[in-house]
Image (cartoon, rainbow, N blue to C red; front, side, top):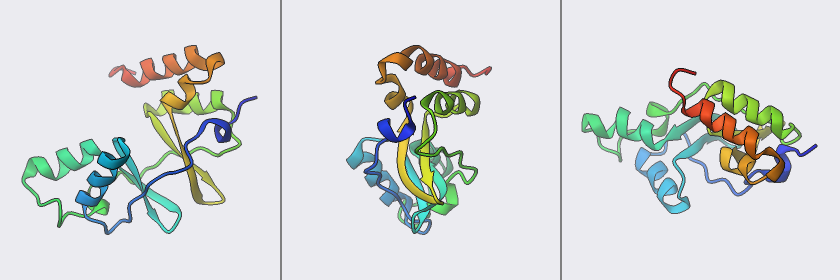
Length: 140
């Protein structure tokens, strides 16, 4: 059994809830990602995406230096654990239509598992592909 811990990214950059969204955008640029966990200490309380920033702030002409991450983040965060089987992780991604899951252990963020991480495990390419297909299907 391959677990999430074996494939997850452990060097995760995070934002604090009161950080300006421009700070989240800088992390996204610097790390080349489209989503950043929002944490209080090491506890994940939300996720902020590039789309959140654009749709909920920039498109309305709001100042990225005065809008905070907690103003635009998603608070209903689905997570997984490091000891979870990657099949289960892929199923969660498919069912919830999400491409990245924060990995949480004892209430603290320890990593991120992305659909691309699943695709790199050869025996699970079909499953990861199906999960991505399900995620990308607007009717799913």
